[in-house]
Image 1 (cartoon, rainbow, N blue to C red):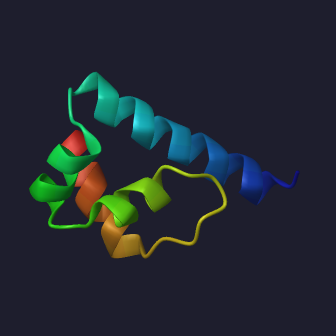
Image 2 (cartoon, rainbow, N blue to C red; image 1 turned 90 degrees about the horizontal axis):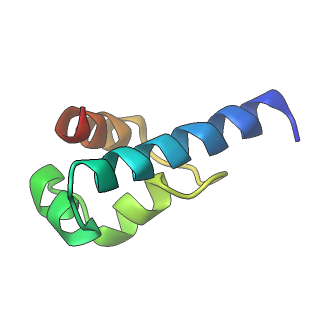
Length: 63
């Protein structure tokens, strides 16, 4: 696995862990960010291509 894949996997896992730690369900985070559940799920799965602005919206809510 290359470094990008490792970083992507770690970032996806961190997003999921942060969401759960904050007590957000996928549906809760979707409402809070204005994204769909599918978009949130993609951001939490390694190796998915996710638009940067989606990641920024998620990070804003869970940080």
